[in-house]
Amino acid sequence: MSKTEKFKTGVVCIAGPPNAGKSTLLNAILGEKVAIVSPKPQTTRFRINGIYTDDSAQIVFVDTPGIHKTKHQLGRYMIQEIVSAFDNINIVLLLLDVSQMINVLDISKVFDTNIKFIEKSAALKFLILNKIDKIQKEQLLELIAKISENYKFDEIIPVSALKKYNIQELLKTIKRYLPVGEKKYGDEILTDLSEEKFVAELVREKVINFTRQEIPHSVTCQTINYKVRKNGVIFIEVMIYVEHKSQKGIIIGEKGSMLKKIGAAARKELEKNSEKKIYLKLEVKVLENWRYNDAKLKEIGYE
Ligand SMILES: Nc1nc2c(ncn2[C@@H]2O[C@H](COP(=O)(O)OP(=O)(O)OP(=O)(O)O)[C@@H](O)[C@H]2O)c(=O)[nH]1
Ligand SMILES: [Mg+2]
Picture 1: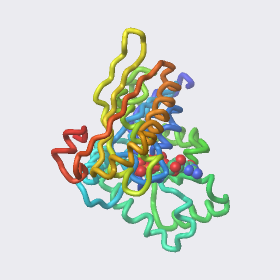
Picture 2: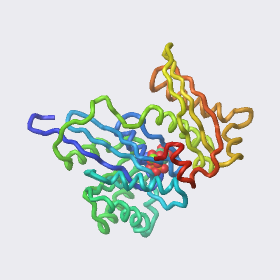
Picture 3: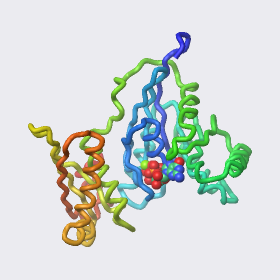
Picture 4: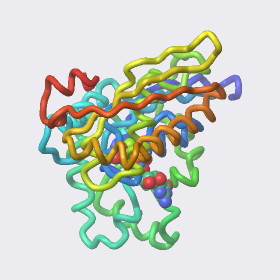
């Protein structure tokens, strides 16, 4: 930063439909994984703040659940999480998956619900066209022309969150719009997500990736014990809740094989990140129809 430039700060919300790549973008910006990612929709269930700091700015990025219609209390909770992320922010990034848009004749089908939703926020609105690695350059240019004809955004920025294309350009543009301010967080602070919550999320990510159909949606995880032992080993106990008895059997698997696979994958990733020895104990419990019940949601941490 040159001496004449002032330090910028602000809050930027990442919103958009499920599976667009919002959490992947947050991780790409931070250069570290703080939000879980999966190819299945509705992975993120609550707001996660990621704090990006460099020499010229400190920006809080808020990852949110996907904008969707819902039939249950968990879905309503998720929608509330998005709406509450719109308070006191500078910019909303509406993130869309371009590969879902290039063959759509009437783009209003993709846009209208999402735009109506983000209009709940008074902040500036940037359109972020994600997954450009999946389409041709000509297709992207055509799409941008079509969008510009019909919609007004403060900026339109194409990126690939997965391949990390154009992320620096995105950051540069965001900084141009942010006000001058002072750093609120230490440089080393990356997220407001506690270690306990991150571990539970990571176990849930493995469950999502190893199971099919309704299971990913019916599962939630909660860390019920987290201790650093005298020998430096971290002992973590995570409860995996399912909605029905039959799902418990699927998660455990034959002779516990599925549970073992989930645990091993989560532990491996945790050990790689923390460089500490981790002992991860998983348990599975049935909490009948927890997604449909406010009291049960509260009990397992959705407050
Ligand atoms: N090819 C490609 N895939 C991407 C890109 N960004 C994300 N993905 C993939 O898209 C899928 C969804 O990514 P997420 O980051 O979980 O999407 P999300 O918007 O957070 O989804 P929800 O939390 O369900 O709302 C994952 O399989 C990602 O690897 C991208 O730029 N290119
Ligand atoms: Mg997500």
